[in-house]
Image (cartoon, rainbow, N blue to C red; front, side, top):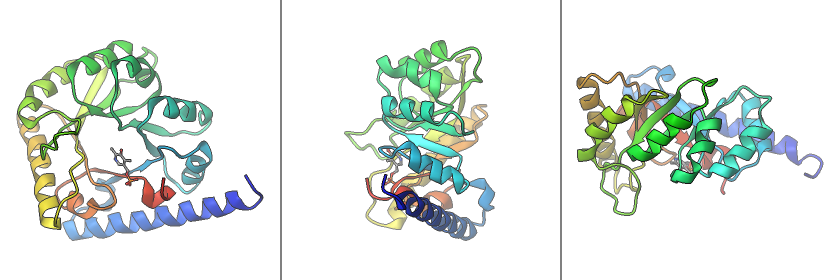
Amino acid sequence: MAFGTLGRMNASIADNLAQVHAQIQAACQAAGRPESSVRLLAVSKTWGADAVRAAHAAGQTAFGENYIQEAVDKITALHDLPLEWHCIGPIQSNKTRLVAEHFDWVHSIDRLKVAQRLSEQRPVHLPPLQVCIQVNVDGGATKSGVAPQDLPALAQAVAALPRLRLRGLMTIPEPAESPEAARAVHRQARQLLEALQAQGLALDTLSMGMSADMEAAILEGSTLVRVGTAIFGKR
Ligand SMILES: *Cc1c(COP(=O)(O)O)cnc(C)c1O
């Protein structure tokens, strides 16, 4: 890296993080919620270990990754830092061992087979893997995520796995035509979470909201927003 480039990258990542926190704070204020009720997940996919170090230096500790092998290389390179790693991308069966061994959280559980493998493969010296079930609330045909009608059975089965701890739901809505339309989808996700809580599951996490729909998501109860581009720049 050319002399001086790293300093500029660090400064802009710190500035960007401050801006995203200001957006979260404004949305929380509009929702009448404490800012501490929403966590920021910095999505670092395609960015190198240097960018993650810069974000950590600016106070960020939780990072989201989509591509398993890329993530494992980064996690290994950054072992000296106390970071929390979240898998937010699709997981093929042949990648579950890497995920079980290296991540703290998985947001993208959408079938029992993958959850069972993660539970079997979670190393005994690590705490249970914290997981969310990805739900396809708006029925986008090409998307991953369990259909709402199949969610209760999957949630009960995942909650029973010994080495996983089911924390809640994740959703990636289609881009909406209006803030009201976005809110309607987020509201459905919250209602699905509440229905599972009413069935006795102790869930505390609603992973929804990205740069474009953060305010709508926070108004409807999101507890974790996932932001990449606004922190690290265009991929
Ligand atoms: C890439 C990604 C994000 C972040 O998207 P940006 O547009 O870069 O903010 C959030 N959630 C998921 C599931 C992603 O794959």
